[in-house]
Length: 184
Image (cartoon, rainbow, N blue to C red):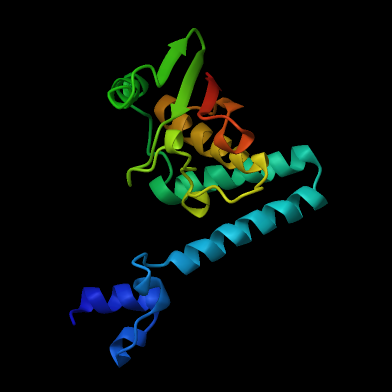
């Protein structure tokens, strides 16, 4: 067994395979499935706790702050001033995946989440957040305010200034699409 195989088994199934046993997750053919199931259950329960203990505005602020932190954790802080055409290049590139998924209308950018780099698509019923990929049943639509923060931070990077983001539609709120308006 090479180092890479060992590390993968250690991370996703413990050391059982070393001793001739098959880890439950690997037997199903879905590494880390139990951890994902646990994470989704935890997220749903945590969202319920937040909803029972916070007013709506505080709940939104916390979720949006988490989304901004998630974006920075994944992509880092914006570095310097963006290129003057950064937004236009993003729009052009993104629209090669789906026409008119992003477009400008005066000082408003209309943005639609399409899918993630692993191939999951919102249109297929998948949330793009890895902790809610399979959309845990009954999870609060307030979870989507995390994406509001994420999208805001993403467009702040393209424009070099903070933006206001409005959640228009989302999968967790019963839509088949996740759409946002970004006010520049």
